[in-house]
Amino acid sequence: MQIAKHWRLTQQRYGLVGTTCTSCGNPHFPARERCLRCGEPVTEVTHFSGFGEVFSYTVVYHPPAGFEFNAPYVLALIQLDEGPLLTAQLTDVAPDEVHIGMNVEMVTRKLREEGPEGIIVYGYKFRPVELGDRVSFSDVSG
Amino acid sequence: MQHTQPSTGLMQTTQTVGIVGYGAYVPRYRIRGEAISQMWTAGNSRSPVEEKSVNGVDEDVVTMSIEAARNALKRARIDPRHIRAVWVGSESHPYAVKPTSTIVAEAIGAVPNTQAADWEFACKAGTEAMQAAVGFVGSGMARYALSIGMDTAQGRPRDALEYTAAAGGAAMLLGPGDESVAVINGSYSFVTDTPDFWRREHAVYPSHGDRFTGEPAYFRHVTGAANAIMAAMGMTAADYDWAVFHQPNVKFPRRVAAELGFTERQTRPGLLAGCIGNTYSGSCMIGLTGILDVARPGDRILMVSYGSGAGSDAFDLTVTDGIEYARARAPRTSQYIQRRTEIDYATYASYRGKIRA
Image (cartoon, rainbow over all chains, first blue to last red; front, top):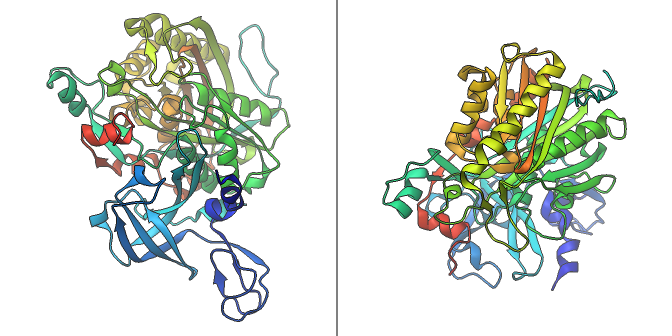
């Protein structure tokens, strides 16, 4: 059981919470204590918009333990509108429908279950933008 | 506003309360009624709905509630830290012990200064949470309270319920009347001990009393609640612009609406079961979102839920000017319904855990 590990990542996984460098303005996801670009200490918490595009992707047919229920699934590098690159599953889309540059938005989904009696882990995935809606979930997250 | 009137059972608040934001959610997968009929009866039985919505493998009541709640917040444009209750009504909470509501509250940024709880009353758990939220705001205890009705309903393979047991629902954010898109004029609950449908602890699928779920259950409670609130409010069916009833299929709400004197035009935007199935705790609440998507300021709405076991909650609402601004801030219910990927019975059985690798 890795309850504490998952619990520590709740903000990051539910709200796409990262940081922005107060010296040079470089945004980071996940959060950093020092800026990856200028090395200065980072103090500003950032709620990313959840919008971005597919930078690259692959299809996983032989998943690691805990992810079997979902296979085959698309694992993608997502470039957020604000700049950071992150790795996430795509959802609500068939592998042959995915393309580089596809506009995607963040949704909260079930990532894995720690066995039939363990906790259920929730977090971000991305899906194609198709509801004609560009209001960011971070506009409504505290 | 008036105080509770014990003679009629009408419930009203001391401060004006309304829906300040609403949000729907329907997963994108659909199975046709014909596909289920083909599976079990070689196509010889007629499905009570055209098709029903099915949640994806990574979706459950938690994830669906989060999206509906975010839509309600987009429309309300309030700081979620001002929410004092996050209440989720469902009969398919992912955990037996551990609240759905705390996960939803965390994801929308309402923690830690909030009440959170899961509600259960078969298909009316959502409206029960909504009625409690009206009281919470109306008493002055909370400025905002979030109520959600959401389900990933279970239907035993080959059972009549398998044609309709669907996934989806809605979130209603209750708040001050002057910030509302629809004001709650009053509510009423009609409850008896009627064992028409149930699921025992550890049972995977619910059981039901077949035809007994009709006359003494659905029709008695929905009609009783509708007639009582209309009498108490001094209203008739013709005085309402829109009406929405719990929809376990298309036939029941159509019949009850006709018996109460409502026309097809009044119920059309809220009657969604034909294309998404029975979303249980979400059923009449998502119907209400369909109405709010088309309603005009000043429109009067009657909503009556039904939950087996059994009871109905009835609400009388008046739409405000705020609806015109709020509506476009989040996806409309019809957009979720039009966004669809059809799946076959085998895929459906796999998604719903009826078959496992």
